[in-house]
Image (tube, rainbow over all chains, first blue to last red; front, side, top):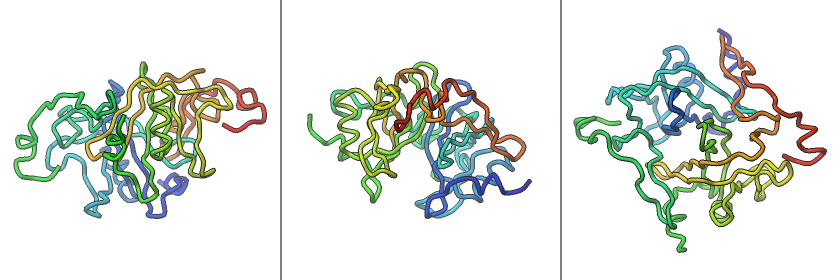
Length: 132
Length: 132
């Protein structure tokens, strides 16, 4: 298919767009990561979330070490074309490198960030020395 | 309260953090906007979403013209402390300046961004010449 849909996105000066991953059944927001055009094109082609790691400056095939792949069900773009939502099936039920369902496990309570969600699986058991 | 919770956030070089607004009952992702420390502090103090408008370079009290205020129910921070989720009650049921529930109304179908959600109220009726 043509790349017009990619060109309609307002990329940052660094050529990135923020992508919010959401569980397609529960609606839980799992994480926010960044994509460049290549990672978004590959995500669509392969039907799974592939991000651009800003810290490692390389493609990040989510789940490549943990097995916690995110299968794509829908991709949404917002009204000003600068943010994406990925509706995903989160394999393993764990998106966060801490072993939690969601990266958003800290809740502001009484002026402090408090851990509000349980660890479902110990990171050492998920990664066994590998990277998230 | 002390500002330690604000200092724990990893602000961008511009002093901002992306904030995802989500309907606290349906889970629908409504929009992504940006906050600076002042707007986040005010949001907590007033119990409603107040963003930083990057285009206008000023505080953006969501709903100030439309009445479509976002009442805060929970604020979440992610594992690397660089993104926030706001669980909100969206007054009027409309977050988007196009008159739709959510800003994420474009769905990628067959290689094109297709409008997937209806306009609930005409923008002219919402704003009557005012700004979103």
